[in-house]
Image (cartoon, rainbow, N blue to C red; front, side, top):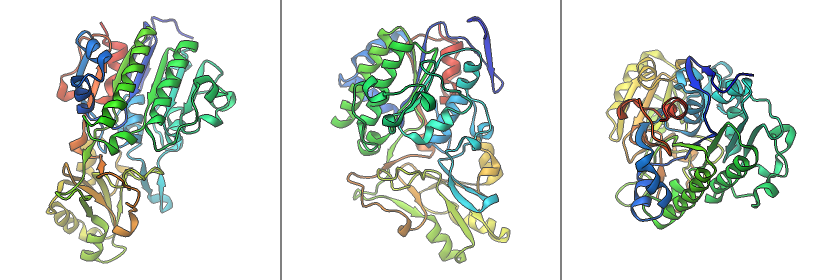
Amino acid sequence: MVNSHSEIVVNNRSYKWPDRPLVVICLDGSEPDYMALAMEQGFMPYLKKTLPQGTSTIANCVIPGFTNPNNMSIVTGTPPKVHGICGNYFYDKENDAEVMMNDPKFLCADTIFAEFAKAGAKIAVVTAKDKLRLMLGSGLQVEAGKIICISAEKADLATQQDNGIDRLLDFVGSPLPDVYSGELSEFVFAAGIKIVDKYRPDLTYLSTSDYVQHKFAPGTPAANQFYAMIDRYLAQLDAAGVTIALTADHGMNAKTDAQGNPDIIFLQTLLDNWFGENKTRVILPITDPYVVHHGALGSFATIYVEDAAILDDVLSRISTLEGVMVTLPREQGCQRFGLMESRMGDILVVSTKHKVLGTSPDRHNLSALKEPLRSHGGISEQRVPFMLNRSTTGLKEEGQLRNFDIFDAALNHVS
């Protein structure tokens, strides 16, 4: 065990031991306008009062702007080319299988939590969806009251042996939330403040769901009420004497045409028509088990081309499509976005602000969409909030700051 004056090196970055408990929040899908408008309209009084004396700027998220790559970037302090998680979903070429990228075996870097835990720190990780829990907990040996790793989605199944805490619903004082609800994120905050009050972890990480942001635009009544809830918990955390550091995994935009219908480029259909079936394979890294609110439609795709002879033609045709912002071969695309080449296809595609990329109509069930489609993944959703309840010095310039610099800011740059 180290003393509180030691620095911990994780993935070639040094982090000071916190001078008070630190709570880092990844507010899923939080386009900066959500909080800006909520503060302007009086729904986030704590944050509006605190930020002038704290830190508030804009950072860029990892592209593709999806949950898994960005959460793992935040908790490792590195881009995906280091930690290896390049999407929620990918094509495992070696095993010829399309699989979820939510198993710790895919993670190629240590987490900040794991390294601090080895040095004796108390750690708490609270996620909304269970898909992230195992990866965020990679390298952690749960221990009752000291190393806690839980999800709101499966709070009813938490045990001391597997999660470091049991009887979680009773502990939080809330029923099990529906995975498709704003209550899922509220449970994350409610559990977080209870854990902070009782166990005083050195590092706490709260990762929410973007269910509300997928359904409601910034400044709408439902969005404002959701952010008012967040503001109340932020005030409670502040009153508990912790450092709060908040960022997001990605932003969010409407992805509709003038009539309000989903504006989709079906890449696999186009490629099959141009080159024939089984010549290409389109992978959508947004894909995960929770597709009700986005139908597996996002603004980033990768394409595997079976015949190298047609690669240049595929690149050329995709790049000329209306609604495509960027089309790059693998090496250039991975260099630009900081991705691991072995986990990307031959071509990377990013759509424009209000377009989404799909495979073929029969592979996307949009029947559950009750509101106009809102989604993410591309450059248009790269701007995210970067906030602390304490002032900081020596941060990177706004255009250079990344969401995965948040632990560095909170541990190395607070005044």
